[in-house]
Image (tube, rainbow, N blue to C red; front, side, top):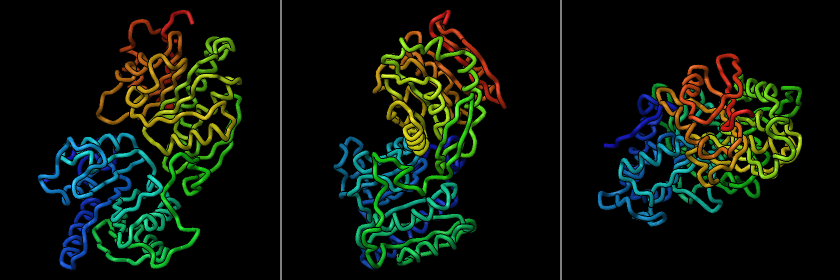
Length: 431
């Protein structure tokens, strides 16, 4: 038996979804058949798109004995040579996967959770088994790329085992055939289809795909993630932007971004707070930048270089990659640091206290949770004396956030737009 904690902010928040259950059933039957045929069980496993960690944790649990569940084992010393890498583009998913692994007595030495794109990882990593309940909303180019790329990451004799919605099953079957991969198993459920396939019968030469490489421009190197390129004009400033699959604001900037731009202009922050003499060493933090509309606009608004750091934080690593790409390509004054973080205080501690003169936050509110007060903790830790905070929230949460404003902060302004409010604050009166 396994015990999983789910999240209202992640896929299938009420129960383990049917697709995952069908995949686990197929995996169990496959391993039973492997036992009959004397085929060795996998030791290197990748759970691609882990969510709260169900697939990777169940696979590890099935392969570990009770004596192998020592939670104190250091990384890289898993029993039986077993290693599971669970990956998801969402930092919240990484946190839940890590938590659920410990809850189910899977040692960190066995299972490591990462916030990263599908099939990212060390260049040398190869897998006996890749599991995925692949999200249809990733977009057809990403799904099509997944099939041969996953196959190229298999060890000899390895397998990819994935579940898809039945509406996409014929596409996946054709992609597997086009990749030259043997189809080992198909299993049909009421709403889903499971496919198992192996590495291609022949090497594909210099075009053979590898893992998504860390530390590169994701949008430039992997165009399957790019949705569209658009030109925008907001607040009298024009810019272009490449929208990425799997992040918000891919067609137009959100109402929250538009309200934030209007508030920045109304408050004349460039003249009142960010005058040229104040820009030396000034740091700027944008939390949840989505496609990068606000940070790119703000860089053009400031109009001059700032010598301090630019940092983008947020849950979705694809959005962080898109924001960094668009910021650099659009003429931003620095290469920003990207930091996966559910909220700024959870992920940016390494930057030190009092680092930023300006923080703009566009939080993704998780239903049925109350973390609004945590943002004041983040601001108190990260904002420099005299700095400015812009907080963009749905109107009900904005009111709650304003009511618990700590002593010493002054509200500078308030803009409402299409159900959102953007509030501006400073920790010095009279700015």
